[in-house]
Structures are given as C-alpha cells and as structure tokens.
Length: 151
Image (cartoon, rainbow, N blue to C red):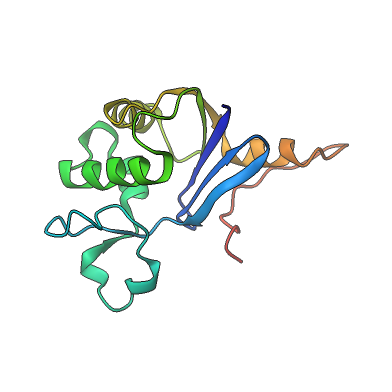
C-alpha cells in the first residue's frame, strides 16, 4: 500500500492519503496529558480551548526547530500521534511531505521516531512542490509555502 503523510506546520495539519484518496485529514492538536494514556496522542481540537495545557498544538514546530534536541516529552507526543494516525507497525513505504522548515536534524529525528513505532518512511518530499505537482498544473508555477491550508 502506498501512503503519503503530510505534516504542515503553519496550520498544524496532518494528512494521510492512500491509493490517491485521503484516509485522515485533520488539525494536529492532540491530547498530551500523560496521566490519561488512553487519550494520549488522539485528536483534541474539540477541547483545546477548554484545557489548553492538556493538549499539544506545537509539537511539530518544536521538532522543526529543535531537531535532535527535541525534548523527550515532545517526542512522546509525536510518536503517539504517528501511532494513532498511521497505526503502529502497519505502515511501510511511507512518503512524507514536509514543509521547508524541517532541516536535516528534524528529518532525522522524525525518521527515528517513526521507526520506533514500526513506521517505515521511505522518502521525504517538499510539501508545497508536491501539492502543486498533484494538481497537474501546466505552464510556469510559483510555489509559495504560506500556510494557507486552513483559510
């Protein structure tokens, strides 16, 4: 099964597609309260305003900035979201679309975290360029990654 995983930081979106269609598309705001392991890493947009300290909306941007120095607590949130969105150990050959804010250290850390969950990322792609290529535009196209996905 071919899957494409997209992680976009400006609007904290997380999408998974397979066989040309979306499987999961949503805002990447997840439960981050370790005292409630049954909810840890599950979508939490519906409670983010009520309990903002019990959710995470910035784990991907922290990974992009910190790379291999990403705090262990943030790594656990990322692993939990990957596990819930992709299914631990059941995903192979994942093509991962990432924004340009992910440097080599962040990509390496993401690769390591995914492997710990049994998720095999086989390649990384520029998210904005991939989005333009997927709609098949002809002629010259200017790609600006402005985070307009939620407008």
